[in-house]
Image (cartoon, rainbow, N blue to C red; front, side):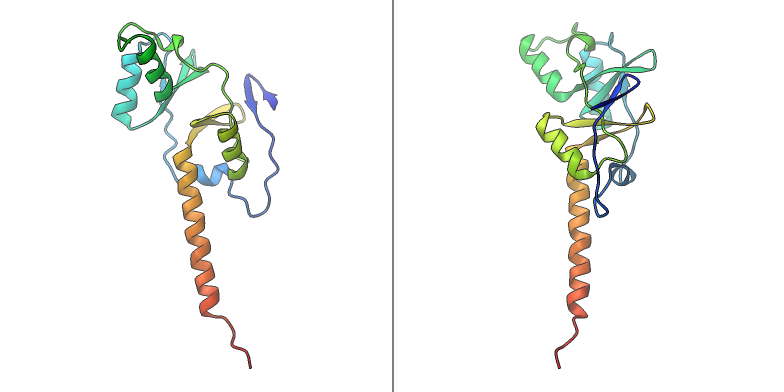
Length: 164
C-alpha cells in the first residue's frame, strides 16, 4: 500500500483487457452519502434506508474519518440489545479503511474486497473521494462483460468460414 495524503491506495498493474474501476463507476450513480461521527445511529439507518444504500462515509470537517455499513449497525443492535437510540456513529464506524483507485482493475478490487472482507470500497482519485464500489457493482460489471463476450462469440461463430 502507498500513502496519498491520509488515504491508502493499493497497487495494481491492470492488463489491456481488464475492466477498470473507472469503467464500473460510469455504470452507476456516484453520489456519496455521508454522516457526521457525532450523529446517532438511527440517523444513519434512516439515511441508508431512504436512499437504498448499504454504507455511509463518516466525514468530519470535510475529511473522511471512517465508514459505517449495515454490518456495523447490526453489530451495534446486537451489542446494545436492540437499543441504539443513543449510540453515536463514532462508536461503531470502521476507522482503518482500504481505498480503491479508478485505475485499479476489477480483478484487483475483487481480490482486495474478498481478502479484507470489504463490502463497500471507497474510491479515491487525487485524494478526492469520487465514489463507493459495492460487490453488487462488481457483479453487475462482470455480468455485463460476460454478456458482451457471449454476444461477440455468437457473432464470430455465426460468421465462421466454412472449410472447402
